[in-house]
Amino acid sequence: MTTADRVSILFVDDEERILRSLSLQFRRQYQVITESNPARVMARLEIEPVDIIVSDQRMPQMSGSQLLSQVQQAYPNSLRILLTGYSDLDAAVDALNSGGIFRYLTKPWEQQDMADTLAQAAEIVRHRRRFLAQAPVAVPTPAVAAQRVRLLLIDDDQETLLLSRDICGRLGVQLQAVSTLDGALAKLNEEEIDILLSDIRLGNDDLRPLLMTLAQAHPQLLSIVVTPFQDTQLLLKLINQAQIFRYLPKPIRRGMLERAIKTAVNQVEEARLQPSVPSLRQAEAPRAAEEQSRVSNFMGMLGRLRQRLTA
Image (cartoon, rainbow, N blue to C red; front, side):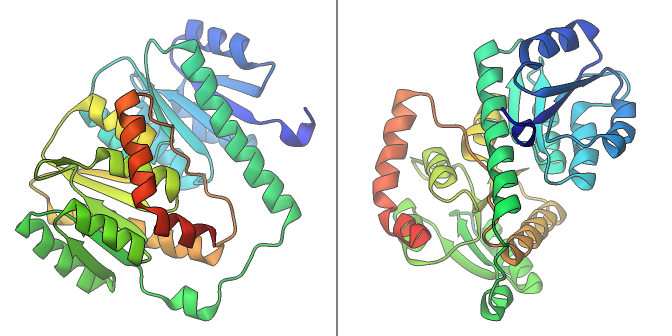
């Protein structure tokens, strides 16, 4: 492996034993840096920026979600991974909404899961690095740059529709709304959509496989999930396998939804300025056989969307 392909990883954990174990496991493949005090991380990153940050959640000085939020603000092109041994929904939500995490791994983690996650993150880093070194960055046409951001709402809740319509109107976002799964599939095939706002259930339909499919077929699409369900394992799966952008509880608070949509709009507009640069988003493939089957079925149903994206 050449120096140009060497990927740097910072592991942050207040347990030195864990840091030693991680360093021994990965130092041959990556440039490994360790830090036991999260309060020192930002100062260290000023001196030696890294590609991937892996942080424990429960630390005495600050939480991992707080740390990754700081890292995200200062180094948005880093890939951030959170480790925790607790089934803590609040921590997971905070890490997603504030820290924009790439993956969430539970402690004690399976060594192969950690290795696979880091390998996927490292390949994204290398691909993006090679692209930026070799290819001129495409400049968007004025028409594309000026195009309104398009949001698709998939929900049958009237309150969510009215609130989304008002927020999108104020932000200048073009809103499309559907209340059935068939309607959602039709819109995704027919329209160019930048942001998805969706519950995880629609009547008797489970929308999680659709979200997983979109993460595979259209990784640039930003998905905001709004739902009354509070299940940590569900959220972790949506983070890892659907790369959801934000997760908001119902009943929806206006301020939270408006911030989520506004942040997504800003990210879409920034991505339009460099349309050819590889995305930092890449979902983990579903593992359960039933989910794999349903994702495969949705892939077939979204054929026109995939044709449009690869044209």
